[in-house]
Structures are given as C-alpha cells and as structure tokens.
Image (tube, rainbow, N blue to C red; front, side, top):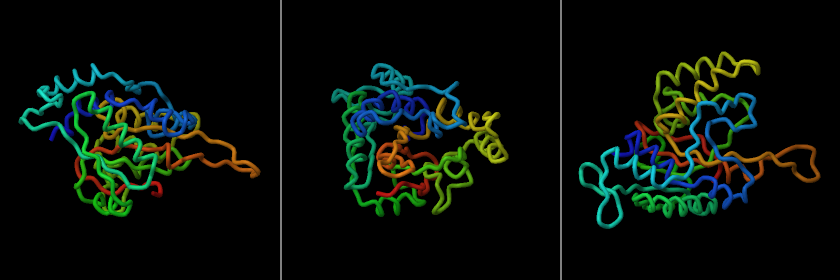
Length: 251
C-alpha cells in the first residue's frame, strides 16, 4: 500500500543516482530523463520539471513524513508495521537492465528500502503485467518515435490488454492535455506537450524514468541509428492502479 503514497514515490526518485546509472550503462552517452520527450525534441520544455538529484537525507525525510519508521535492522516499517520491501523484476539476459536492478537494490538499501530482485524471461514478464496487477515494480525499455505524442502510454483509456499504459496511470488533467496534444501543437506552440510533462514528472511520479539515448552516426551509412536505444531508454515502472502491458523495447 505504501507505493500509492506520493511522498514515498518521490523518495524513490531521490533515492537513486540516475546520472551514475547512465554513466555505468552507456558510458555517459545519454541524458537523464525528466519528461517523456527527450531534450532534443522540439516539443520539450524543461521549465516546471523537477530534477530529482540523489539526496539520501531528503529521501529518508520524505519516507518519515509519509509515516514510515526506521527499524533496528536499517529497514523502514510502514504505518502497519510491515517492512518496506518491494519486488523489482526485469528480463534475464539483458545486461543493461540487470545492472540497473543491481544498482537500484544497492542504492535503495541506503534509504532503508529493501528490494527483492527477480529475473525472468521477457515473455513471462509481459504475460504477468498484461493486464494483471501482479507486480510492484519492473525495469523495461521503450522504443519511442519522433512524434511527441505520449497518448498511448499515459492516457487513462490505454490500460486494456495489449495497450501501453502499463502502470495504470489516470489523471483527468493529463488526459485533456493528451487529447489537446493530438490536435496540435505545431512547432511554434508546444504548450500542450508541456502540459502533459509537468503533472507527470513534477508531482506524483508514476515511474522512475532513467535516461534518453543520444543519436549517433552509423559508420559507412547515410543514416542515423539510436545507439543502444533499448539499453538507455529505460524505466522503472511502479505499481499504480490497474497496470497493463506496456509497449516495450525488445528483450
């Protein structure tokens, strides 16, 4: 039940060093994700977004404000007395995601939260989270296009089987912004896209976004590829309302 608490979710953001993860996984060839769209997108507007930098003391303070109490074993107890322990899983064999899981386990221990790591096949992970609620957190990657339209990932109507709102996110204000976004904007009016990002990542974060990849030229070919796209563009999804399978990158 504590995952539904806004302060706990914010503590989870403050409790992990995303910059270190980007450096570890892709040697710094990526940027920390603060919004759905990457900074290179014409629709990106970073104003109003919160950059949750690693702050162990603040994370612990938020947990205590939410009602958690530190146990003698260094693990917080929730208001019902149960230890604050959560399961985070990812697909076995993906070295990048396994590394993120390992780092998350280590760093969340420092703020008094125990992570139970689970490795399983990619198909098993998708089967259990489409559309069932049998997860507390999982690490997966997204392959995103250039169109700044996050409707399929964040609109409350997209929670059915085979759809992409896999964390069950629902917010009427965000729904309206997403609908407005589909009727625009053009390059001179990015406001609807920004209206989506601010409530998503500035207040009650539904997930812990990790990083956006850089575009890098592919040798001997006159085109670009996204270097390590499925490695860098990762997210840690948290259980919300009624999770359903998200549109993920290949395993």
